[in-house]
Structure formats: C-alpha cells, structure tokens
Length: 266
Image 1: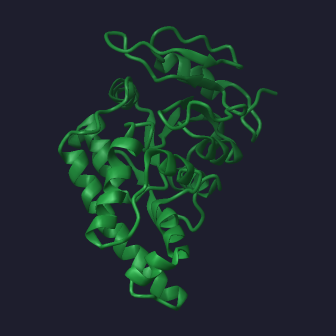
Image 2: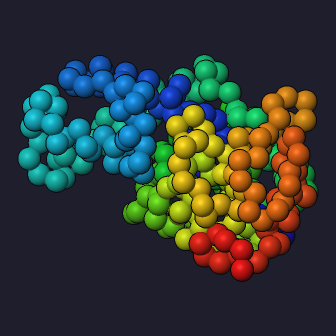
C-alpha cells in the first residue's frame, strides 16, 4: 500500500508569512518584548527548525532577556520560551480558524483521493501539534483531518533537517519506505525526508523557491488543480512528467521507483 506524508507549513497552506510571522509578533507585543520580526528576518529564521528553537534565539539579546525577567538557568529559560510558544500557538490557531490561510492548490484533492484509494496519509511537522491540526482541518475539513495521523512538535528531540520525525512516522505506522512519498517545501524538510530514505516531492512556497532542491524527485510550484491553479514543473529528474496537476498515478510512480537515501535515482 502506498503512503503519503505531508509536511504542514508551506505545504498544506502557505502559513509562514500570513500565519506564523504575525502570531510571533503578536506574542512579542503581548509579553512586552522589544523585538518585531520583519518578513526578511523571519525568512532567515526559517533555517532554524521549530518555533521554540526560533524563540530561544531571542534570549541572546540582553534587552529581551531583561524583559523576560532575566532567567538564569537553562530550565528557567526553557519555561519562558515554552510560555511564549503556547501564547503564539493560540494566536496562530485563531488566525487559521478565521480563514486567513487557505489550503495550497491540490492539497484537498490529493489527500481526499489518496484516502479514497486506501492509501496511508500522515502529516510530519516541526510545528506544535495544535497548529498542525488546525491547518490540516482547514485544508481538508474536520472529518477527514480527524482520521489522519499527525507527528508534530516535540514528538522527537531533533527537528528537521534531522530525519527523526520521518523515521518515527515510518516506524509508528509500519510503512514501507520504498512505497512512501513525502511532500515538502523547504530544503530542511527535503533533507529530513531523503535522509530517512523517502522519495520527496517539493512544492515550493513563498519563502523557499530559491533554495537548493537537488535531492528531490520532483520540484513543483504546487500540486495543482485541474479547475484552478495549474502546476509548473521546476525540476523533474525522475521523468514523472506531471501536467497541470499532480495525480495519484504520478505519486504511485514515484513510490515505485528505486531510490537511495539521498533521494536520487539508482
């Protein structure tokens, strides 16, 4: 049976600029922190996997450290970051519920079709689980989203580009890596998936289009929709040849192709 694993941010929805960034900045204002991240600032911070990990960098600024009460021990600093992150997650999920982040083209179509065909569908993300579940429900509806396993947040100790979250997903769901395809949008995610031995489709997002996706099996502007936004093929080293919209047949061909742990053809 073929399995399909989706990243969340930038894949299910283009969440970073219109969701996570304003949620982070609202959190900084809520806690009186002397910092605001610009669009460019946040683009650089996306190289760091995980929201808590990005927030932790703020404590390197003496002004922010003072505003946070000058925690001195690693445990106290971790609790400060966790408090900020809980507030940020709440704000983000409220933004998603308000409908400000629509699903990316083709996501609902592909997940619905895969589910109907009996494929295993899962989500593996570095974001907090409540945030991921909110985006997933917004993308495919609450009923279908409730049936999809989610591996997110601190479920593994090391975030992408480490392959831990994909290795855990494969193990927990009993998947065959040779029959599993991942959909990612960033180089960190691509490296995590290919280092886990999984063929990977990249659908570039607003922040990631210029990243290096050499290891990908297929690079697209989106999954595409026959009646909506058509995909553009940016790289097709395996010769899959999707037209207008990525189909389950295209994905099945990717899953059936032999590939090494770097994601390239043998």
